[in-house]
Length: 220
Image 1: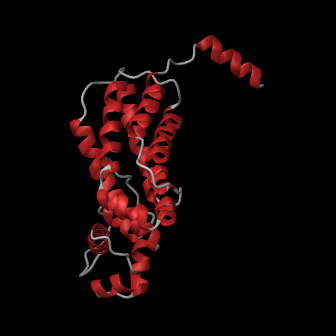
Image 2: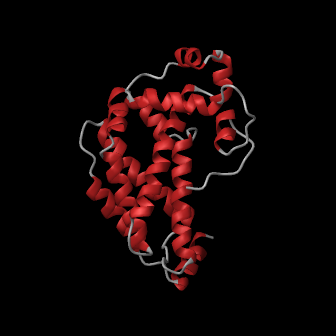
């Protein structure tokens, strides 16, 4: 999944795109350590993490922005890898390909034990990190989905019924609702229904031009 080329944001975000000076310890070391702790089911404690890295707590916060942002980067690192795996394994073209990517990705997430444990242990934090606009996860998921849709649309294999930005955002919200919300409520994710909803979104017929013009005129 392509990463945005930017020099803004936290030191960790800059390090992730290769825009960081070399140092004895770097923001990427913080991410690696946080990933290990998260996978083990440990609470990510910023003071303990700073001591482990041999830096001050202030330096760690300067690197990552906040504890929630760091956890968001941890979750995104796994989501990014999962998306690439889903794309590599998906078959077909157009709507069928996008749907297969979605199916593979959401199934992998539903079965990912560390993610399930994280949501069960702290559902409020999980919901903020996974679905908040202030976290890196949702925005990057939407961007990745839009890029996937644009790839198929530009190749003439997909004729979306909605603007790509709207369609990408809606697909991710469907995934969040059927995956994270179900887990937080204590029920199994309804992956089949999520795939069914996304299939409808991807295969819906675009509005006819005349109908679109009439609707636009009615809104004026």
